[in-house]
Length: 130
Image (cartoon, rainbow, N blue to C red; front, top):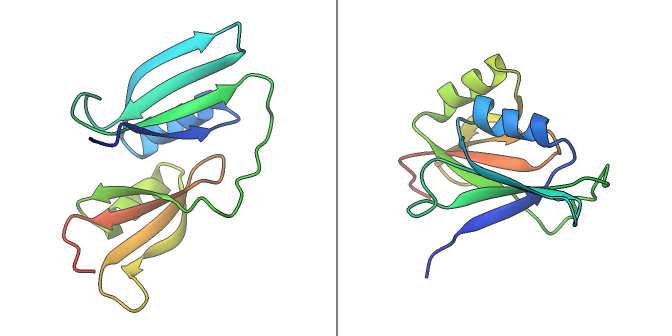
């Protein structure tokens, strides 16, 4: 078994695609409209779906807002250097909501950024000790 994808519902598909490709460096893997169901599915990732987990963005054409709820936590993305990634994300217009630094009660360096719909993305360095 392996994890195939994680799905997020988004309100502005183009803005979300731009965030995940231009700011987080993902590649648009595939996209398909379902006119009868009035939704679009878009898959993004850091490599082919045959080898990597993807992120699925679901855009329901008639939905303008979502309640993110309090059960969902975040998506984690590995980066070479968390400090440098935060600076690059801010320079590209992204929102860093927790600056890079050691986690509370540990030594793993992490940061959090927010996507256009308010989903949290945790940035983790390649070397983690906690």
